[in-house]
Image 1 (cartoon, rainbow, N blue to C red):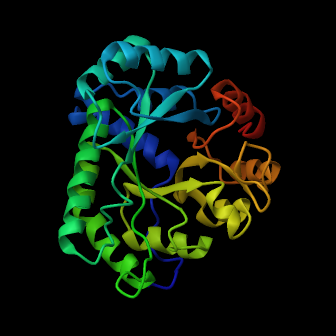
Image 2 (spheres, one colour):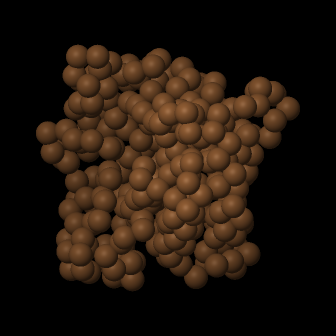
Length: 302
């Protein structure tokens, strides 16, 4: 693993992201042929963090998709995140988005835990590679700006920390040209996978990938088991492009927002320090989605 150096190239900032998406559209690239709801929303709403929830499949047909998107919009969310591969009818989903005027801001790689990019078997890694490329294409088709990726998992002597680091970066670099060409971010999430359990390691991992369309999808709750969330935010700085919103505590585990050990005032302070203005997506359950919307407005007033 590389030692961190101030001379290393950093992943792009959110400002660079907005500039990149704007210039890409102006240049008439492939993005200009898709409904770029996410980019338009970001450009209009730079004064605050955009709130979303995980939508998973969202619906099986256009009618159910419209109903679900309308429900989320009425609850006050700015957008939703789905998953790929496996969207029931992606063309219907794009039509539903247009009719409701509500964005799918990103997609989550659906297979990254099972067909890992760090798996010792190259055949398994290829399945993960193919799935990630499909997710990037699906994100572009929907006008989503990112695909969330768990890069691997430490499982034992054939999949140790160094091997996860090396194998996953090698695989990630294979699909970054596609992501760059289509204007889709590949965002790495910090999870409980035995990998990069300090903010410094996570920072250095992102930096070693060293690509302007790869950054961090920082999970506020996942890291709390190891150290304060605000420390991670400050260490990652502008590498963080999007947020997963969770709470976690020694007594309650993953829990309703505000009932764990996350210090939301310090998190908000740290986010303001790095001038974060992007998508924050709730993963987990509160009393209901109306409760989630209110809690996010209260706890993340940035």
